[in-house]
Each structure stands twice: as C-alpha cells, then as structure tokens.
Amino acid sequence: MKFLIWFLVIFLIWWAYTRTQKSASKSPPPLTNEPTQDMARCAHCGIHLPRDEAIRGEKGDYCSAEHRTAAQDRNPA
Ligand SMILES: [Zn+2]
Figure 1 (cartoon, helix red, strand yellow):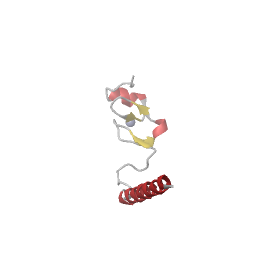
Figure 2 (cartoon, protein in one colour):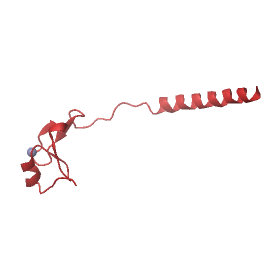
Figure 3 (cartoon, helix red, strand yellow):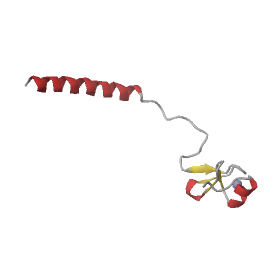
C-alpha cells in the first residue's frame, strides 16, 4: 500500500512537471520569409515552386535541372 502512495506522489509530480514544461514552451510560430511550408525556392533564379516539384541539389533546391547546372551544383549523392 505504501508503494502505491509513493507511485501516486511521483506520478503527480511528473504530471505537474510536464504540464509546466508544455505551457512554458508554448510560443507563437516563428515568422519566416517562406510563403508556405511546402514551397521551395530556386537557388539560381529565386522562383518559388512546390517542394515536390523542386530539383534537389547539394547547395539547395532548383526549379529545373538547367538552373542546377547553371548554379554549378550537382545531384546529391
Ligand atoms: Zn530557377
């Protein structure tokens, strides 16, 4: 029975601790220049395009393979 009381006390401390941690970490989302989360920016011409349509390079994302080549970038290994 003593064990159960200790278990309850520890659980309550842990519960109170996680609650305070959650409320402390609550902050507004960071403001960025990116229009939306799913957009990529061509590192060569600066155009925005959907991330799943972007060509990936070692230095960043590109709108086309030509711009990746023009930026002297290559496909990540
Ligand atoms: Zn481009």
